[in-house]
Length: 250
Ligand code: MG
Image (tube, rainbow, N blue to C red; front, side, top):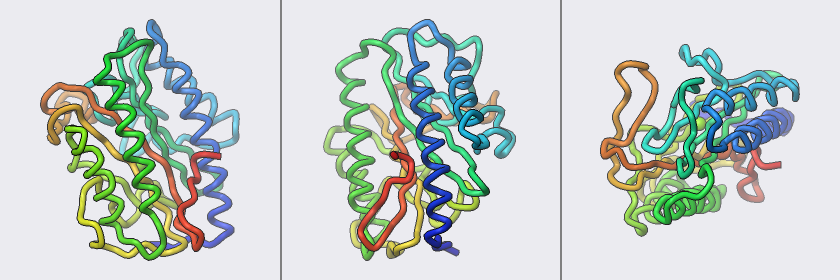
């Protein structure tokens, strides 16, 4: 069932989104050559605590951190580590969320550590643009397929792969609610978007190929099957009468 949110609930989600955004930006600042992925985790976790939120990811399904930190060919769900040192040219995806008074925010951003390759820079620009196009498609009266189609078409027009096994989601008083929000689909098809819906829209785009594999040792990290880099951008978005409103971008 898709839960529509009241204006009071949207206010709480806006605060959860604000905390999530500031935590994400603190993590982005910690992406420096020589830092570890645990330095990113620390920055995220401290920011959420300082703003009166609770980390949404810590303990979720047993996940051991407040942020997922995924480097290069890691797509999502990378576990922060004191042993993983960030190198010049790496691209680092950070995904984090906060809970405020029982409501959730969820967002992600990919950033290069120092100077990276032209191809990686293009991957970041295209994936960020995929998110923008997806949000523009999240108009009341449109359908879920309009969001997925916007992402897929733009990514493919640049020759990039689209992750299909992992998708965006409804969000609210739980981190994952209905509906699923795939990064592919047919325009004009699927669930109709209505005011009061809140969606975590999150394109995951690979330099090459759609396929991904899960790390069998840690049980979490998702990597591209080809070993080529991947990028991930995410916002929590409310569908309103007046169009989409980004809750994780104050
Ligand atoms: Mg999400």
